[in-house]
Length: 194
Ligand SMILES: N[C@@H](CCC(=O)N[C@@H](CS)C(=O)NCC(=O)O)C(=O)O
Image 1 (cartoon, rainbow, N blue to C red):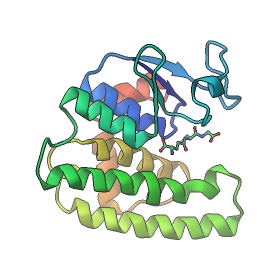
Image 2: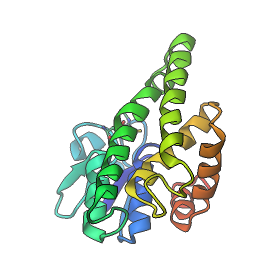
Image 3: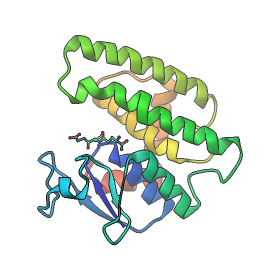
Image 4: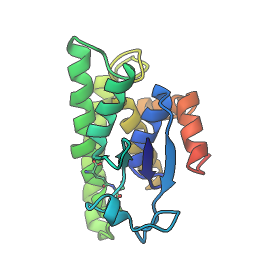
């Protein structure tokens, strides 16, 4: 299995999941020029042009974080409850990351104006408020077990600190303790971000 990734990008959510699930994989870095580190045109691998992309073998490429995260959970039997409401809460939370939170960062990555960044920050803080309520006193977002939703939340909160957005205290604490998890620390090292 080969994960095409960019350091610190949303592909890090899929990367953390692969590591946490213990699925053997190779990494291929993709540059801003859309060339892989071994000189191939990434657009020919994933015509959408963005990471993550997961080569399942024989050139079968799976894209979209949500699909890759669900695939990793399904294949490993880890990071997602097999049944019950926790399973669906995990998908609910992961969809919230993919759409409502990830999308809100757009002005920061696409050269938005200061006004657009301010508006995006306000939206993100509202979304983070929802996460704080959901997290409550739990260790992880959907309970005491680390799930695919946490893989994504970690990246979304890391971006906030990168953009200078002050996180509510419970999320700053969540980010600090999640960063210490062996799977997360190992992923950061593998991406050259430790
Ligand atoms: N819908 C995709 C979005 C992926 C995405 O936005 N990837 C970004 C990195 S965070 C990327 O590769 N952007 C490069 C580009 O669009 O040129 C998913 O959920 O996986």
